[in-house]
Amino acid sequence: MKQYTNELTPEILASFDKPAFSYEQLSGMTEESQEFLAKQQADLKQHPVIEIYRIAVEGSLTRDGGILKTATVTAEIEISNGQKLRVAQTLDTVVYPDGAKAAVISGAGDAGHNGTGQSVALVGSCLSNGDEIISTPQGRAILVLRRGIPAAKGFLVNHFKVEKVSETELTH
View (cartoon, rainbow, N blue to C red):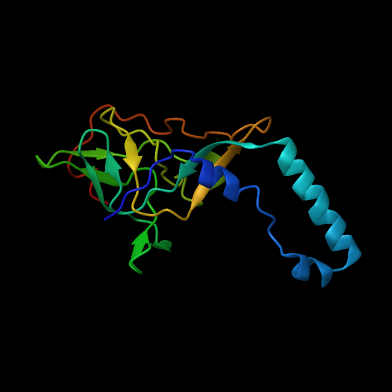
């Protein structure tokens, strides 16, 4: 399964500069809508994308060889082969080839908060054993950081202090 990282390639960067609407679509909108969109586009140019963070899903890999086997959020993202994978969140479990497990302890912060006190896991999220998610099999869902705009409160901050996690605590 193809994996995607947070690398900000020239192609990805260029995709953020493309207008959201074609000339034909804009011409069918009210003048007020056209002005709003022009202002929004100008604001985005003032704050260019400086980093991307892909949303982690089932099948995401870690630096130390772990794999996120089961994500607990019911939301799914369809990948390029048509398969649908669940979105990962903090406290989801990564499994290693030797059977060891670790919990995701950082995520998108308040921006990705799902109402449970947990947040969406990202490529870049930390694990309870010091490992980190480094790639995801989905290439569509991306969070961006823009120059001059602060990240969401709690973004990639370790939200859960995990001293020692038992096998029971990691299966939820």
